[in-house]
Amino acid sequence: MAIAAGGMLLALSSPAADRKIVLLAGTPSHGPGEHEHNAGCLLLGRLLNQVGGVKAVVHTNGWPKDMTIFDGADAVFIYCDGGGGHMAVRDRQRLTFLGELMKRGVGFGCCHYAVEVPKDNGGPEFLNWMGGYFETHWSVNPHWDADFKVIPKHPITDGVRPFKIRDEWYFHMRFQEGMKGVTPILSAVPPPSTMSRPDGPHSGNPAVREAVAKGEPQHVMWAYERPDGGRGFGFTGGHFHNNWGHDDFRKVVLNAILWIAKAPIPAGGVQSVVTPEDLKQNLDPKRR
Image (cartoon, rainbow, N blue to C red; front, side, top):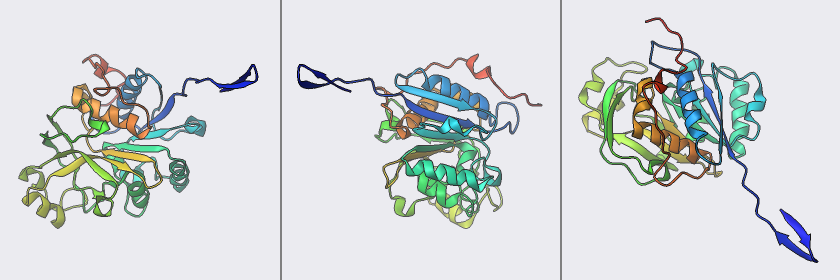
């Protein structure tokens, strides 16, 4: 802001507007404590709103009918079931709409099943928006204990320590050619047991079997810097709701959401406390 004072133009600093983050949660899925999209997004949104300079808005149970939720958005984070039923690809107009947001530099992040879209319906877009995605007959989705022994230096990993945790860690993602613009964030070597299932759209294929046999580290979380300056990330964990109770698991995702919104990440990463009682809140009613 500038005002005139005694014939002089003085510049006064004004507080920067909060960075707006829209979190979209999918409809109920799987059994109790699994794919808890609504509870997960509500938890993450609450924790993000404890960070100064951030306004997190959560929409539960699928794609919003009121599109004004996206007004002024700096980042969009999606946590939902994927494949052909992914909320972003069920209607081609939604992909087009998100594409317009991306052109304006809006950040884009997806969690767990939301990283999977059909190769011919969303695949090219997700590849360009967040640098990689789950491609059927190439990527796989086994449950395994991922041991993240080395944490690379990146704003997203600030304050994140090496950790080991069991999840349905998808791997062998389809990334940008030559990993251009892509930075691996969480990588681990899958055990041979991840290849125990027969080949199929999600279970195995010759390329991934060769990679596992060679002991190649697999990237289950990555960051992407788009040529237009926008940012994206993918995180393949998030099957088990209780994993949000793990400090480093939670912190790396909270940091990533801030990063794609170009919001400052606090020194040491986002500090948050989640209790067992917190993890019981907003769970979808499901049959056991």
